[in-house]
Amino acid sequence: MRTGPPTLGAPDDRLGVLFDIDGTLLDTRGAGQRSFVRALETVFGWRDDIAYVSFAGNTDLNVLQQVMAAHGRELNETDRRTFFARLPEELERAAEGVELILFPGVRELLEALSAAPRALLGLVTGNIEACARIKLRHCELHGHFVLGAFGDEHADRERIAHLALQRLHEALAPGARLSACYLVGDTPFDITAASSIGAVSVAVATGKFDAAALRQAGADHVLTDLSDTAAVLRLLGLR
Ligand SMILES: [Mg+2]
Image 1 (cartoon, rainbow, N blue to C red):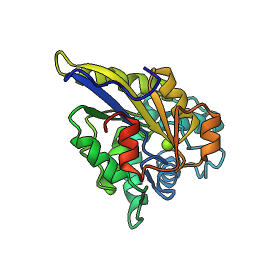
Image 2 (image 1 turned 90 degrees about the vertical axis):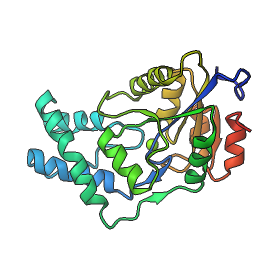
Image 3 (image 1 turned 90 degrees about the horizontal axis):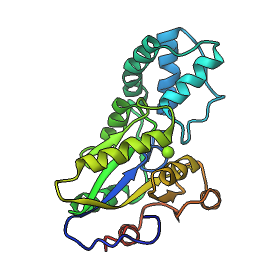
Image 4 (image 1 turned 45 degrees about the horizontal axis):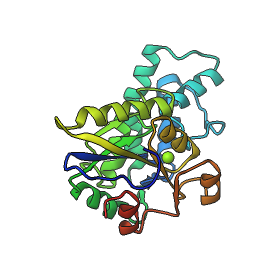
């Protein structure tokens, strides 16, 4: 399943295309991190700029675990629930008046894929579901994805990718089969997650990692960005 474009022969062959959000589709201009900082203060009373945490390719649950550990505390279920209930509210506030950056070609690509009857679009993101929805809604990208797996479901991105793959299979109509799966992301963590589910990795250099670093990390395909819709569709075997 990892080499070349899929051979979508039979009419019931489906193609799974999974997308990361931050650094891949859009950039929140720091609103994501600011919301985390604010929520830490409102929920735990901590003033912590969390500069020691790297958000790129990370998951919200893992970030929270790292911060708790830095404060000498183990994450319990009540804290987890309270924090993630607060985070979306803080994200809305942090994103207010901020024009999120939508990367070149993203809207056109998602529209083309949504119109392709064989493509099933999903999310594999470190965002908790409510925050993923807010970011997509701010960029008017909601409505393209039929499924997703999120950063409050597991701290480990590979496990999140496995959940998404499972949901792709569940989303298939009776008699249909998943003939290939692609995962589009901007960090080495997305590449590893793709590989862990047998998906073809498409790395885009719109995040914190340049093309050379993504190639070095073993991406199956590396693109500067998603601006060439026709080229991406060809890569996915849809044209
Ligand atoms: Mg990302």
